[in-house]
Image 1: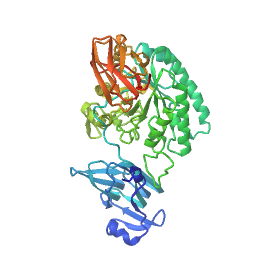
Image 2: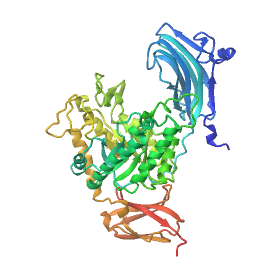
Image 3: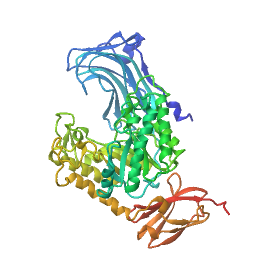
Image 4: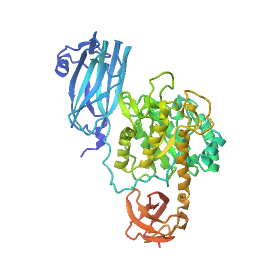
Length: 590
């Protein structure tokens, strides 16, 4: 059986329009188009003088070995006085027919106006329910001239692996819930963080090396010196959080810009993470490494696929895999967070990391529907309420659940933890809509057991829950807003959970380690009445599960378990983890 990797870069379709005799065979008679000068040699010209016309042609695309894979479609285009945008305008799209008989459209974003020859493209995942696909090109409900040349479609990513066993526990990598805030590392103060911990009762912050600075990021000639200076700034936050008890999710933002510009930039980024992991691997205040903030910000690649694909430049799944393995050679334990590409609420564009590598978390940012959450930030826009209709669709809590379903499905399919790294809505939405939206979001996150960090704490006051709902009103109310009280009410749960949670190093007294045939636990520190203990292998499979009831000490028989490294999890009766650690089983010891 050939390797799946053999499919990468397989050509699905290509057309350079040089063999004129074949053009009508493929695209039909030259009624909606004419043969004209292309970017190289000849191409097709679509010329529309009527905005209510459909000058498009199509040809079928083979579905052989395509379902589940991601393909890249690209073309060279030129425009003259092209009107229309969104649905009308130039058309380069795949039209898929689903098993239910409906059509699904995958379109390269249209260009309008006047532009010289350029390459455009898009990465598209072929859904499992598609039974046929056709390629559609031309002008639709627009006027102007549209030239097209050098059409290419090729495989650029393999299908996701099959689902894991549903009995595998979803290991969140830490006890309880992380509920906290995003902060800007270059503006937050010690008093702010102390207040966030002691008064608000948040238990984590998400902070970025580079923050919103350094737009050129990895392309900067003095990148290394900037990185060192930014890590010194981060050291200060580490010191503050060590003293006040906040746990830090340390990520990369400005200094991750340019991720897909060159192999040199990617090598520089991997080396940067090696430095960060070396610096913080033994720092208890840091609980996670967030590889890249919204990685699509870095460049058009690989969001917009163009031919020919530079195979030296790693796409996000391969780059994330490389980063994880590089960090794990230095730090074997801290959580590593991988964010979705394309601002997606699904992480289907990420091949799951090798399941034997522990503490991998998958993350998205929740601002949907975007016209609602970002209304009137830069000037007048339509105003939207929540619950309510946004761009023709009704949004309420059930709709938000539907939007987040792909993420939930990914979690259930692969038994992996999920983290909402950012979520928010601008504070001046009408009818107190932001409070209602945040409340529904948090209730969903809590129901699914997803850790979360609100955006943001004392950063830009447009996102502030401390300010009023007045449009750019700079005055802080004398009483706490209901948005602030909402967050505080959930942060208070951190305090309640902390009373029954302990760190991994204090999880329980157990012996011996390494063990041969049995392990003894002393759990009087855990402050719970009933629960269970699980022994899991490196793939997260439960090997032993034992009920515990009103016991300060107990023993589990491991005589049937083979040699190796295992994890134990102690949970209370509600399923929350109250203790965890590692056990080495070695039958060969004396």
